[in-house]
Length: 206
Image 1 (spheres, rainbow, N blue to C red):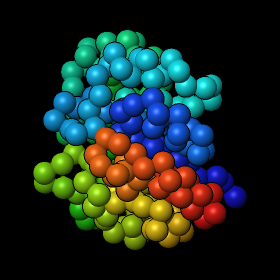
Image 2 (cartoon, helix red, strand yellow; image 1 turned 90 degrees about the vertical axis):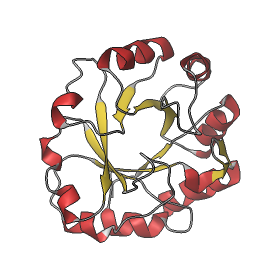
Image 3 (tube, helix red, strand yellow; image 1 turned 60 degrees about the horizontal axis):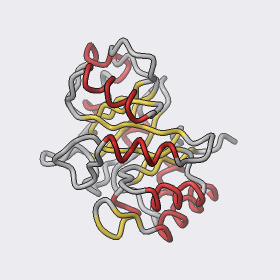
C-alpha cells in the first residue's frame, strides 16, 4: 500500500520546522503572500532551509506572483518546489523554471474538478473554496467529489484537515499527500507540535 506523504504548511520559524521534521513530515511549506498571517520573509526562509536535515522537501507558496519574482525567491531561499495558490490559469503555470510546480485549486462543486488536466504541473493541491482566503481557512470541502472524479495527476488534499479527520479523508480520497496548516496550529503561523505529531501519526495509521 502506498504511503501518504505529509506536508506541513505555513512554517514561519526554525523551531516549528525542526519539530515537524522530527515528527515525520515529508515536506514543509513557506508562504510568500504578504497579506497572509503565515507570511515569512525570504531571508528568514533561507536560514531555516539551510538548517534542515537532508531528504525534506521544501515548498514555496505564491499567490498571483510574477514569474520573475517567484524565481528570485526560489534561488534566494534554496527551496525545491513551487506551489501556485492564486488565480493562475493553466498558461500561467508554465514558469520556464527548473522547479516542479504544484497548482492549488479551490473546490466548490463538481465543476471545480472538470478542467484539472489542463494544468501543466507536477501535482494538484485541492483546497476548500473560500471567497475571502486563498488558503489556510480551516474549511473542509466534500471529499466525495474527488473520489468520484477521474484524475491522472498526483493529488495533494488540503482544506480543514485535522488529526481527528485526516484518517477518514485518506480513506475517501486516497491522495498522494495531505497538506495541513491551520489544523495543527495554536495560532496562525505558530504550530502546536503535539498536534503536528498527532496528525502525522494518524496519517501513518490510515
